[in-house]
Image (cartoon, rainbow, N blue to C red):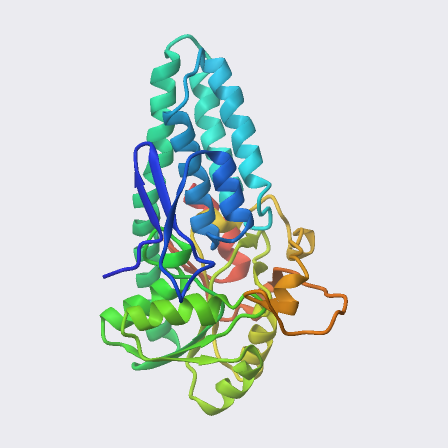
Amino acid sequence: MTLQAIRYSRGCLEILDQLLLPDETKYFSLHDTKDGWSAIKKMQVRGAPAIAIVGCLSLAVELTNSDVESVSSLKELIENKLDYLVSARPTASNMAEAASRIKAVIRQLAKGDDYKAEDAKLMIIKELEGMLEEDININKNLGKYGAEHLLGTYAKPPVNIITHCNTGSLATAGYGTALGVIRYLQENEKLGHVYCTETRPYNQGARLTAYELLHENIDASLICDSAAAACMKEKNIHAVIVGADRVTANGDAANKIGTCQIAIAAKYYNIPFYVACPRSTFDPSTQSGEDIIIEQRPHAEMTSIKGIKIAADINCWNPAFDVTPAELITGGIITEYGVFKPHEVKQRLQDKA
């Protein structure tokens, strides 16, 4: 049974508190966008697709339980709430993409006198709710394309994969991006072994990816972040597959800190390096990785684990993400429309718009 990180019915949203995993499985309710913003900022929910879904569904819940006087006041409310949600973790582009899309809908509704406020509100709620099912379908297509490209281009089964951070059911609506490719390989008996990094300092790999791999009965091992190159040398790795929080116009990809050094090692060992992400992660308005504002996280994430001090009282530099240059993404960028080389992703995805 696939893990379910997001539970939703109209007017009610619950999410799995990922700060408590793997020790405790606990859901809690989000009642409005303030709760949504807090859950995203605290990383109780994380993963670019899941951030967008939870942010938008928190707005859906707030709208369901709110009265609106006019379509114009509804438009102002929605635009303000969406801008607020985007500010929680601005490096990831999925929430910003969703906000832009919802704003376009409400602006169109507000142009004339064709809709009553309650009717317009219901249309926006339905638009927000549609993201859950849409994300699962997108990820299943993405998983299929990625697996077939790997097997058709670089490797024969069974294949051994390295992945970094968490990109599965806990980071999406319920299937996964990079882990979606791995899940598809497993479902079709093409997977050998998966090596997941611990992903310091927040340990998303050790706490979350390892938890998901065990839950799915996938043959896997946890490795230290610093062991990735040695693993490539010793363990017959066929591909590295990671997710992304933003892909720029030139094909650079921002992902969890530590991704770039894995890509460099993969290039040295001639192992294809893939980035798996939905179209909503692509940001054509940002020209390159140099233009991405990288989120800085609290020092305490490095110096302590679950409140236990593990480091001296030293100043910390703790960026949440790094940027992998397009030339290191040698396998390609896996999307729901196919697998594209970084230099062609802008044109290919804009053709699908």
